[in-house]
Amino acid sequence: QVQLVESGGGSVQAGGSLRLSCAASASIFSANAMAWYRQAVGKQRELVARVIGVGGVSYADAVKGRFTISRDSAKNTVYLQMNSLKPEDTGVYYCNGVYDTAYWGQGTQVTVSS
Image (cartoon, rainbow, N blue to C red; front, side, top):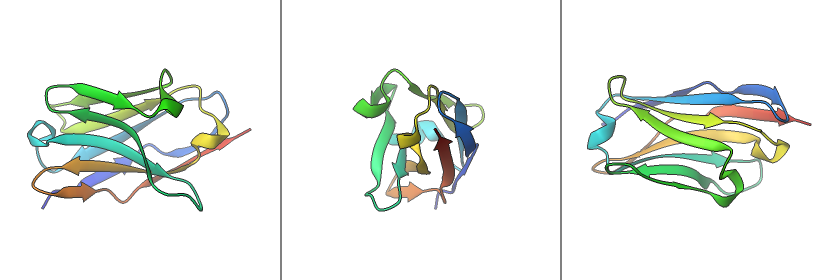
């Protein structure tokens, strides 16, 4: 059983920045992939950013150039740096880790006002 705990969400005005953290109870480098998803009210959960294996990274088109996913092996933590935030980035952000199975964090709310 792997536990993922997100933090760093909050409310910010458009154009602002936030950094989300996901602390894992197991080594993040033993995961097949670590990712951030988000879900807005009334919408399906969607992939925001993913890092795979030794470092392959991918982003949703909507966040390319604004968001950056990174890892800190010493802290077993995955980060999502979010810059130039837009109101459409509002939602609950979830950390996802794929080990023997997929694990999810409890989510952290991000609210971007115009």
